[in-house]
Length: 142
Image 1 (cartoon, rainbow, N blue to C red):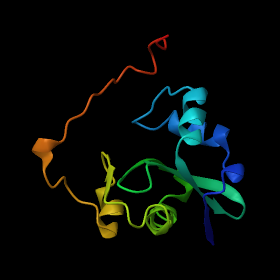
Image 2: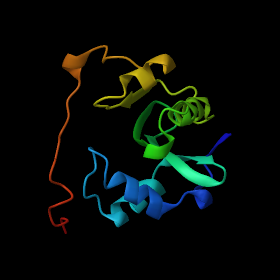
Image 3: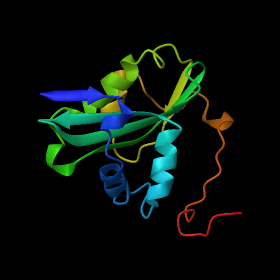
Image 4: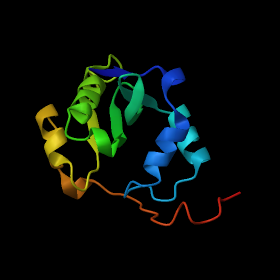
């Protein structure tokens, strides 16, 4: 049975950090950056038999916008419904149900998100981004 919680006291920061340092989008991310991001976000964890096996984070104002990120499922538990359960819990959360726009970026997991209503940008020409791919390798700004 998969259990999903957003009880921060149950989320293992060290485990999340270990996962994220191996993810293509956050290679080399420092632990303090992971902890700070968690402190400022709505976080979800997936558990199977009491062990944390997945994680997702949402940056949001809980009203108009949310950004779903850092969705990760331990390799041994992939393909067993953990990712779907995590995203279902995110989408059902009271602070996110009525958000006007929710975004995410994925390289290879479109099939996970499409059943929940995610699709390509409606107006891609309006979206802009600033990307700093070496941010974790550079010294922090004072």
